[in-house]
Length: 196
Image 1: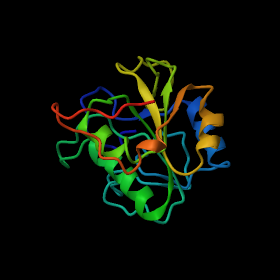
Image 2 (image 1 turned 135 degrees about the vertical axis):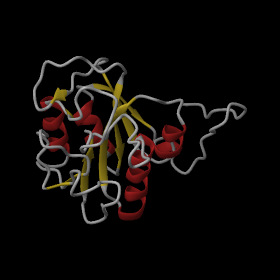
Image 3 (image 1 turned 135 degrees about the horizontal axis):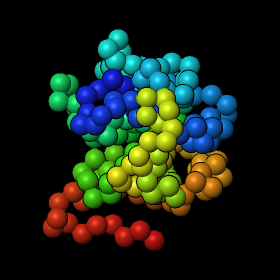
C-alpha cells in the first residue's frame, strides 16, 4: 500500500488482506497486470509491480496495463508532495485515456474533493466494505490493528455486473455510473447531486 512512501505510522507496508487479493484476481480473470503501489511484503503479486525507490507509481505510465489494482498510501508523502488525491486522479485519468479496468482499496471519504473529482462522476461503482475496521497486513503479516476508518473498493471500468457479483459478498455495492460526466459540487454552497 505505501509503495515505500513515508507515512505517519509505525509500518510503511500495509498490505491488502488475502481475501480481497483473491476476490480482485477472480474479478480480473485470474491475474492482475499492474500494482502501482507495491512493497516488498505485498501478496498481490501482479505481473508488474512499481515499488519505490526504483519505480514511483505516480510517475510511471500505466497505459500498457489492462487491469490495475491499487492500495495506495493513505497518508501524505511530504518528500514527493503527494497524497491519496494524486493516486485517485491517476486512476480516473488512466481509465479515461486507456480504458484500463482499475480497482482501488481506499478510505471512505465521500466529503473530500478527491472523491468528488476522481470517484463521483468518474468511477462506475463502489463497494463499501463490511469490514468497518479492515485489518491490513503489516509487513506481510496478519493480526495488526484495524484501520481507523471505513474502506471501500472503487471501480473504474465497464464490467459492473462482474464487479457486483464479485464484491457483493464483501460489502454494499453501489452503481454510480449515472454520475459519469456530471460535475460534482466541491464547495459548501453548491447543492450535492441526489443519489437515487
